[in-house]
Amino acid sequence: MMKKALALPALLLALILAGCTNGGEFTRSEMNKKLKALANNLIPVIETPGAMCYSVVMLTPVACVCDSCGEEAAIDGWVYDSIDTIRTIVSDIKAEGHDVFLEVDTLCENCSEEGKPVLRVSFGIKFADDTDYHMSESTIPSDYRVLLAFLRGERSYKDEYDAVVALKEEERAVIKKMTGLTYGK
Ligand SMILES: [Zn+2]
Image (cartoon, rainbow, N blue to C red; front, side, top):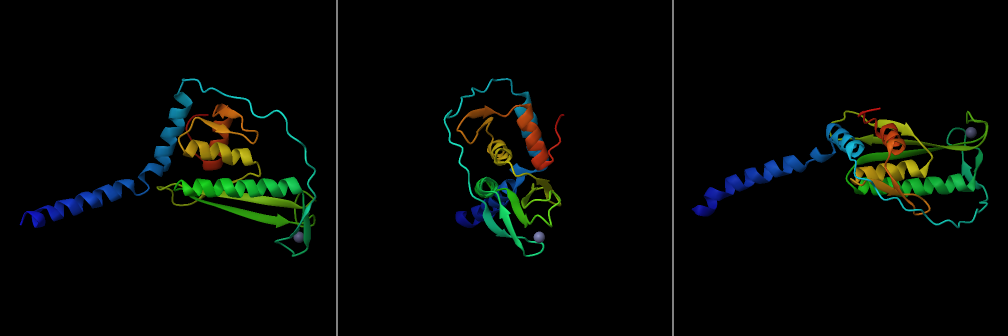
């Protein structure tokens, strides 16, 4: 008898708990609050320099196919590598439970506005209370590193040379560009 009496309240509690965790943490309003808290946190972040020695590697162009006309598009090796890095970071953002996607378009010199072969990278993110994706364009891996750190609740990020960099105003501007979060300037 006791077991039956307890079953319903337990089920209700489970449903309530499930409702609370169902994306509630990642609403736009909640993330705005987190960005505001980041801006208002006056405890200094200790920044550390990264490795000073690095070699400049001249990467050979990578032969890609233009998504618009099907012709060959020779993409700069380092640009191609950057996009690979961005793909990895975006998977990490996804692994944090965020609804994000990356779209990469290859355009040859005839189809791109720049008059040279390019990779156009569109990033979309949708918070739990959003009706649509917020879209932005960036081919800079650091932009995605900054965003991942913020979404993880961190106050600094590691750049490509392993330097620890605080999420200052400049980085918060990147977060706003990538997410459309609106707190402050
Ligand atoms: Zn083309």
